[in-house]
Length: 336
Ligand SMILES: Cc1ncc(COP(=O)(O)O)c(C=O)c1O
Image 1: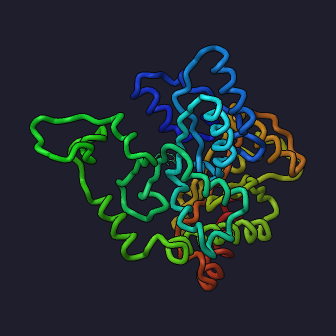
Image 2 (image 1 turned 180 degrees about the horizontal axis):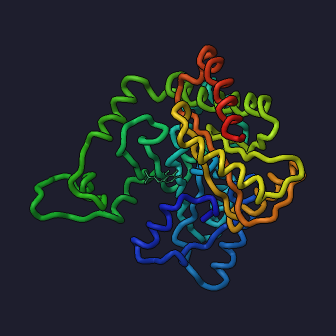
């Protein structure tokens, strides 16, 4: 499990009674993505100590900064192991980024960097996927999905209820932890598909627009304020940055960035979030970030402001022209 995982994985490990120590963390590279070599070593280590591997997890669209793990490279590695008789389940947490796949196969996909493109294309090769329509699917909460490629795999979680008379074995209700529940979320996803269409030139174009807006924002913000230090890379539509002077210690820029976040939360005009990356998970990324402005990584965590681009209207020239200078003005006001 890579260090960029969502905290819900810790909950899952506890719910299953495995305990958090069941996770073997896989280190990240300087871009904050799972390092395939480190994964290879972890699997080797598990083999040598006779420890079965329940699953390998990759993340397509991390919660913090939207990075996309190299799903394709991991698939290749697991295929090689499979050919040697070792079958490891591969799950992709695409809760955030899954809908970016709607860009594939058309003009919209050209907005992606080739490594992100390859990773998203490889999702079809894995065993299972988490997809959250209540995130980039624009569907109101709650609608989370767990998808498997092979329908038979649902049988692992199949429970029969003698009082429910259903001829159909393998019916949906039999496979999930929840019993009774609302069908509103699922209907909303269906309706989204019917009205917007998940095709590359429709929904996909909207996803491409969020990425393009995010990149526009990142450029304009750096042009407008020299203390903005962008987190690199920006694989999708989340832009994170810190506010640091050249050569400054991380502890000092952390204080400034956190203080701007605190005042921004009271700002009625913009909604900005923040996150804190730990050295334990993101050591290389933090070092690379600080090195770009000659700073000093003197502390174990890095505070970032985090701007998430979901709103399709950011694509409009007139909206950008109205919002961008105003955002910079508000941010600079909060810096003083
Ligand atoms: C990558 C990722 N996985 C899982 C989750 C958990 O989703 P939920 O809050 O819908 O349970 C999130 C939520 O932000 C996420 O970003």
